[in-house]
Amino acid sequence: MRSFLLAIIFVFLFQFGYSQNDTTIYYKANNKPAIGKEDASHLTKIKKKSENEYKLLYLVKKGDRWIRSKHTRILTVENDSTIKILNQFTRNEYYKTFKPVGDYYYIKEYHKNGKLRIEGLSKSKIFKHWEGQVKEYYPSGKLESITRYKNNQVSGNKNWLENGEPYIDNIFGEVDLMPQFPGGEMKLKKYLGDNLKYPEKAIEKRFYGDVYVSFVIDVDGLVIGANISKSLNSDFDQEALRVVSAMPKWTAGKLDGKPVKVGYTVPIKFRMH
Image 1: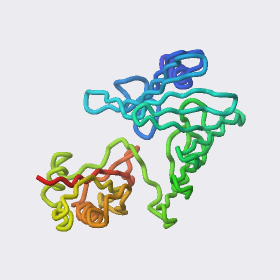
Image 2: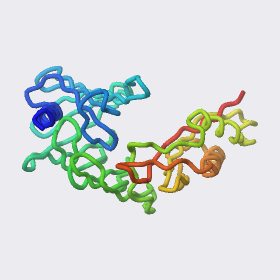
Image 3: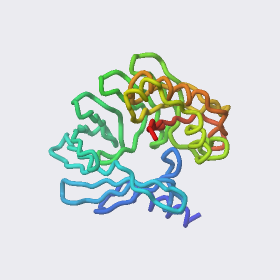
Image 4: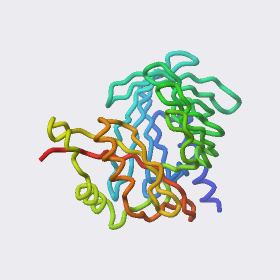
């Protein structure tokens, strides 16, 4: 019992980085706290570069390897209410504001166009540890989602498409057992390659590119809610939606032993050979 309690205290201190210059935060699925690398599915490294500057690195476990994501950020605390954020991969620069509210900070983070992107209560002003209701917005300013968090873990959400149409509710991003296409990832790639038809107009004009399709695997393993998250043109978009919507039934994802809805976004690549 004592060793378990010590482990909890260690995670708490590590998690919020008090008096630490370099901190690593380990997570399981749905941001459940993990003890270390062996127990974790993803992690955040926080490196204090100077009194007001921090570097945040995000890594995801793929099999036995840890892969750094493209979301490494440099955070500069400019004053007692504003932090400048630089994405080192895209070189995009944007801002967030913070205001102390009891034991939390009320965070507002903005898109690079200056419109509000996300707002809610966080345990830290440097990294996100959400509590309660968090709202996210599209770059247009329209409401995208309202998510409920408890200790940084998603308990539910309501979602909307950018046109304001209600979307599917209670979608999770990472779960204990992720949904699986019949036969696995290689079979999914084969399915897309075998079933994707190149639009005739695009062949004539030698067009190519990627369409990003978002969809949800529901509790029965069915593909639902397919929509375009990044368009190429109408012909490519329609074909990408057709092939995704026609996917066979997946094995449903599970969180805490129960089937849940899991969201995906995949690139559908159109190439001429």
